[in-house]
Image (tube, rainbow, N blue to C red; front, side):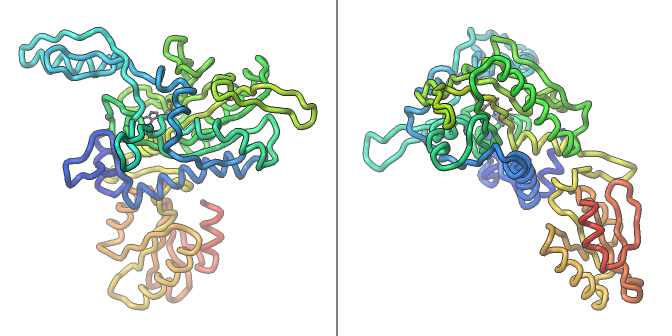
Length: 425
Ligand code: GAP
């Protein structure tokens, strides 16, 4: 974990937010490479969910909504964490975080201090904002889940698109939770991004189970197709006392993180909880039948996916560290080097290749130091292919392509390079 945290900072994946002022707990910025990486995750998710299917449409709802939404959805009453407070130093910790509690007790024990905890008290996770210029300002909330935007737009979506039940609405966007103990880099943040599908079905027990099972498997497949190691992923069903207030059934996809098995994505059977709370119905356009649909939800954290993809891809072999990222996720798909920076004919040809590739892919340029160092520098950020222009290239119009994972090198004709990369990527 320490190595991934250091790499993420050193190479521009993730920075503490407002770092020059000491940062702020639970907020993070994505640097140049992190932004590409995270966009690649979101793009692939969107391609998979929306472009790849004809039963799912997209939405981009506002972060701040009428506060009545949160009253109806149950978040103002029930979106809570149980907290215990240390009677010695008044620090509050989530009652279910046994490890943090043990660590806290150990710190006090080291100072020969007693620790006593209060009984757990519930603490609401919604983040308040104040709107308007005149007093009293209007209190609203930053959305605690991106989901409600889909439900409150249910009728708008039905009347403006051609979807019919069963259908889904996909959305990616920021959510905010007033987490008491943010930590483990971006794992638990106060501002984070979610990628969610709300899939509407006819209310029926069997259909509900079937759809839940289908989406559970689809979502697991997505992580595996993007290269996450199978042994680091598992499903975990929620017990009835840990399910969110809206869920009839909940199962997590968990990742085997250095800090334990942790939730990566939640699959929820929300039944008609939300639509009935918002008093919304569906009328079948063919039969005229009216009912309140049920919802099966897949809710993934973009930042958690990014963090776990990084951890999963991190590897060391002999004297190098590398990120074995799936090419779809790697910030740069290739890097182009002239063998020597002070030979204009090499630089010109390398530039030509670089400019040609740049119209198609995110490509890096590097002409500093020796080739070995440039390879290692690209390995560390997960660039799958490095392309070197050398003196032979000037004669025979071929270049060397070096593979990140095997370090094997191949000579490829410059005119075949685009096809070669297309096939590999
Ligand atoms: N709409 C359902 C929902 O929000 P959730 O299980 O509370 O369900 C879904 O959250 C996902 O959002 C989680 O699996 C996780 O990946 C991500 N997530 C939740 N809280 C987070 C936090 N504080 N920091 C980073 N990601 C978080």
